Amino acid sequence: MRQSPLLSLVVPLYNEEKSIPLLVSSLVSAFDEARIPYELVLVNNGSWDGTQRLILDFAKKNTRVHPVHVLKNEGYGYGVLQGLRVARGDYVGYIDGDNQIPVDALVVAYRTMAQDGFDVVKGIRKKRQIGLLRIIASECYNLLFRLLFFLPYREINSKPKIMKREVFNNLHLESKDWFIDTEILIKMRRLGYTLGEVHYLDKKRLGGKSSVRFVIVFEFLRNLFRYRFLR
Image (cartoon, rainbow, N blue to C red; front, side, top):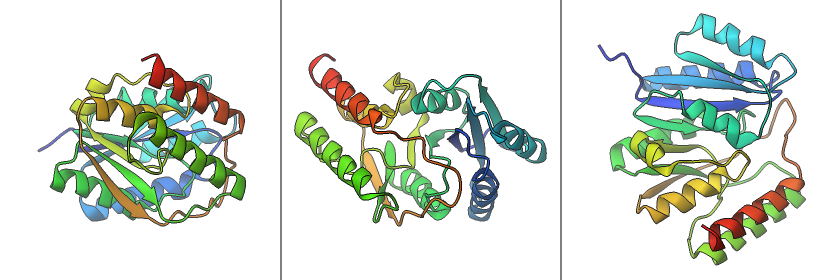
């Protein structure tokens, strides 16, 4: 009997106590129904609300839920990396903890990778449930990315992102902030890995509050030019 999971899904959570119950129950139901051997690595990424308590409650009830506690929030990417480094699956990936990604998209992404042999699979959102200014900022960022790196990728920061374990080991990811999504795509292309994409309809956030701020735009720009001209 197999002891380790096939798929390890990391979910970084920062003050998401209102989102966690629906998120975890939906993921567990979807993976059980699809008969995917899984583990959920729930990362309390420096939260100050009830996030840690809820994560521990789910871990007590389900042995496939593994808690990771980050004492101080050092960025979105830092939380993702803390989860990925303890993940045990043959395939490892992550999503946001805001319930905006439909769980069936995760099942499709995993099956696309397992059946078609892609090294990395990412999501593509058909419609974004966010404000106009964020949509404009995102489109400008995606365009700048394509111009600087001559890569055809769209929706750079969309999730899920799932990759083979050996791919994760070889990427040597280091971004502590939101640039981790871009870092993955840049490095995987440089190493010659293949990318598959799955399309889905983004859902509206029902609870909690986005931690994305416009200062992140400047972080993105700084990292883009650093990777393009200094790496």
